[in-house]
Image (cartoon, rainbow, N blue to C red; front, side, top):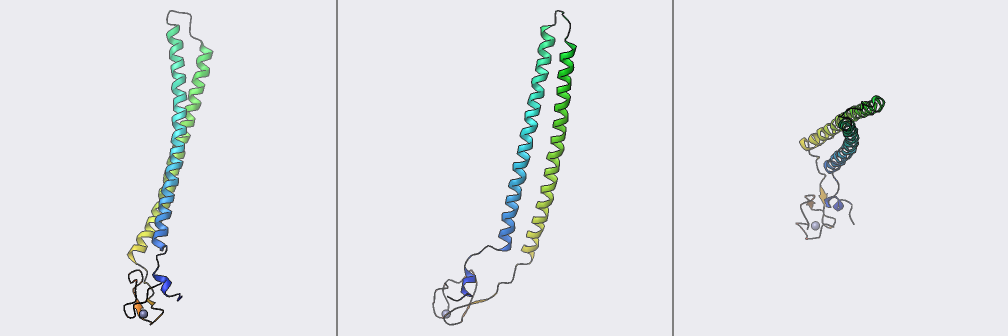
Length: 149
Ligand SMILES: [Zn+2]
């Protein structure tokens, strides 16, 4: 059948392609961010656990017996390491957000530019009689009634 007529069938426009890409980019951003957020929550949970241990030790020795300085030193070091980890992951999270926001801004600007200047559709013609079609609108030829397919 006439190749011209095939143009009226729905196909992926550049705008649709960009919208898909924007959705995929947003999805990727969200999944990367939620992975980092999970890591941060895990590290914070470990830190809280150590703080509870320290509290228990202090409580159990409230009637004397002295505080185990070495155990405390080890716990404090663990907390320090976890705080560093959490700080690094928060930086990473901000970087991911910024990187993907920038990409999304670019994609959305491209999409806006497309919307501002819609592509001029090439005219399609009936394969039977040559009558002009409006792509995406006409299903049958207005002149001879031939199905546009
Ligand atoms: Zn026709």
